[in-house]
Amino acid sequence: MDRVWYNFYDKGVPHSIDYPGKAMKDYFNEWAAKLPDKPYLIWDDQQLTYAEANRMAQKTANAILTLGYQKGDRIALMSTNLPEYVILLQACYKIGAAIVPTNPMYTIPELTHQFSDSETSIVFVEDRFADKVVEIMKNGKTPIKTVVILDSHTNTSVNTEAGVIRYEELLEKGAAVEPDIQVSSEDLAMLQYTGGTTGLSKGCMLSNANLEAMAWQDTVWFTPPFEKPEDMRIMAAMPLYHIYGFNTSVNINVAAGGNIIVVNGPTPDNLLHNINKHEPNYFAAVPAMIYGLNNHPDIRNSKVKMIKGMICGSSPLAVEGLNRFEQLSGAVITEGYGLSETSNVLTCTPFYTKRKIGSVGIPWPDVDIRIVDLENGTEDMPTGEPGELIAKGPQIMSAYWKNPDETANVLRDGWLYTGDIATMDEDGYITIVDRKKDMILCSGFNVFCREIDEVMYTHPKVLDACAIGIPDPKRGETPKIFVILKPGETMTEDEVKEHCRKSLAPYKVPTHVEFIDELPRTSVGKPMRNALRQQEMKKREGK
Image (cartoon, rainbow, N blue to C red):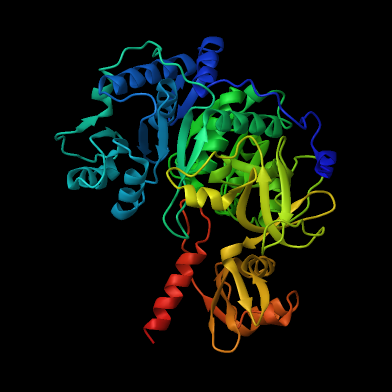
């Protein structure tokens, strides 16, 4: 394979990495021994050093063992961004348990599926979400036997009953010594569930080796703006239960050894408050965070210029938003692409060599990517032609948990079939065109929803947009675009169509336009086309 993308790696970024092959817990133990007094977790007016955090993780790990849990058990963590969440991650690593990150916004049916499928019997849950988990434990439809309540300091009361214990009480049961449990790099470290927007969510089996590889790939790629990785002051604003937030805020630090600033609630006010108070120099964001900071009235008088490097992902970042934040901060924003199945990142734009607007960059060290035909997935597509993106790399999951059929569908001959449609140019730069499931078949032509979105992003009146395919008696399917306007702007349906005609073939131009105030989004801000389709079908059924 001709890896032309190596020509555009930043200075000092290797083509391949010699991974030590250690368990995740070994890294944290080594940092705690090497830099015991360095702040590890910072939040509000408080902090924990590496040594203090390690002692808490040891106590937590041993306390879990006293309850009868052991290596290999699945342990669910269900909270917003709290320092305890990070301590719990380290505690699970110490005993070789498989972490099951859980979105606290999930409904009882969604939680029941995830807990049942993962065979989780203990859940650490933030108090304001605990009632859902206690109800699930009581109904007996899952293996849950123990619920541990984390204090979110919101004056939430939870009745302590059989099987329910507070985290502070649990800590008292554990000794501050390292558990004598052997954990290898091949042991399962995490069951990261997919978003479930196209059906029941699936558990991606990520080993210690997968997460280790991703931590090193993160570190070598994101170091160029810094003197050394240990200088990183990471603002953890993305949800830690999501693979993107976990990887770019906590997992990267396994190899980097920097500070983690825990941010609970990524509102523009809260982000700016933490920027001013704690002076982070790196953070991962979604476009909505960047737009919010750009429009904050106090941004020019803030310490935003302390930020040196960023990654933005989850959905496309408008060029206008990217340029404005870089001008305000002086930081360089990279854009990346990845999945839960890949421990997060596969490709990213370099910091300093070559930027191609609209691209998600080039494959990371030790990652190979091909663009193959949509029908059989075997033939490589010509340069610039769309096809399914398939990938190989050390961060790719071994399988879906207890799901051999779906595993066989996506892992074929050592390649992960992502279900994403993309192009690769002559330099190896990847552009994501759409999801295979989001492709509209219009009068026999393939229309990509994301292409329509991108065109609408260029209109000065448009804040956000999302296209879907809807049934059409003549064309089979036809594009419909949902548009959110910037405050104070007005626009007509004809203006939208005329703007699209300038850049799109006639069959790609939306035949239906709807102006809305907000889009349904995932927990990390990604527009949910599936939810829009469901809303549209309900409206049509009601006619």
